[in-house]
Image (cartoon, rainbow, N blue to C red; front, side, top):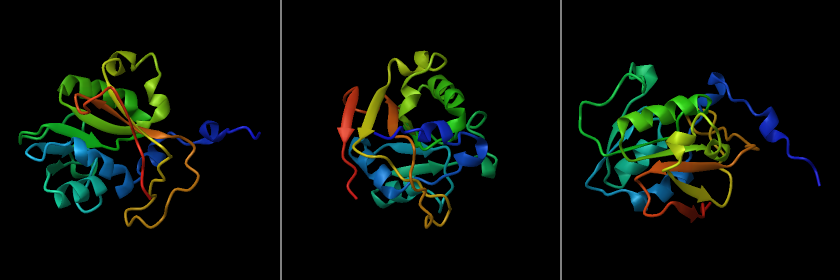
Length: 176
């Protein structure tokens, strides 16, 4: 059996952080969102995010923000009231993101690599979390137009959640 060394060669730097989530990875969240609530997507640009597009199409009020528009997640919080924080954050700074989410103390769902579940730095932020796990890996898009698929993703992605899912661990099939 060949050795899977993809995770050893995968990039985890700032340049590799800007990928785009396909709709297939957003759709499973819909059943867990109360449509009377507001979702803050802190790593998303209007017109370039499937989170914003899918949520709005399904009647969910959203607030988009992104560092490119001067809204740094670590310094910014919407003035408007919000109920959930949902996005695909930069993987290279996941520990800092989990710490900030803990400080904000709001229900969240963050799409992160499966190995995020283990780590001494983030253990305290994860021990009361929930996980939404998929039957297959997610192929992200490399471009804003969502035409270039990132082939051969070397890791599984899951939603790490807090106060979002009805159970600690849920398995979902990605249909597509």
